[in-house]
Length: 360
Image (cartoon, rainbow, N blue to C red):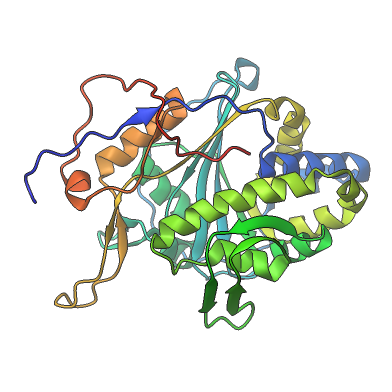
């Protein structure tokens, strides 16, 4: 009930892992291709935005962020955005939103998944789901709202279009995952509209894998989908690194490059790719932004389902992840816990409890 003492969130320090992250592998391949293919300085330094025209929107001013120089092991933070729109086209909502940070100082890669139904305040003072930001104001609005939500500065964004990922998965021969339950749903989309998967371990083609990561009609809804996205990343990472796929490198890069919009230049990506071998030894930590479910109230006009987060808790959780490598054991809370959350009086310590993370 309201006013009940809110249970403090329990954080823990994840065990070390030395697996490869999917997008680090992709950056490494991209860097190799650029080195082999050359190209003018203009093409290396221009943003890879495919000339997309997003709606104009007034963004709130943010304080300037001063980073250390690269030689001082500065942190790189990239917002990974997955959308169902096509390359070169504005519009479409966000299906995947992961704030990713490369932390050379602590040799970690931290990944914070933000559920697409997270309720946030837009610049005009209205509240809506964070996944609508891409359609309303493009990736820059999505970046701004993510910083507002987490308190974390963001260097760049990388927006991936799902249609291209389908081709990539088909090129590498599919990915093997454990489908936790029977999945069937008609999305109503013009393409890839039917999700139809049986329960059990199986190899999925591109369209099936897309359905696997987009399905949200189980008991956990958006949070269940976030967990499947983590499983998908692990499976795709392992498949990309198989020797048989090395010969497919040129085709993979061409397909991947065509599915991405980013404010990074080829030169930016090349610099990251040059350090990919180092990044592969980093600890990978994954967390879902903690919060609670809100189901629509029939008595409230235009009420929707949301993932409700406490603004103070969101910033606290992000700080614990990105500065200390600590994750919250269970991101799903009772609504009263979210509403009445207060910061702990001391820095949380690691525990031996179950860990909410993806080991890539």
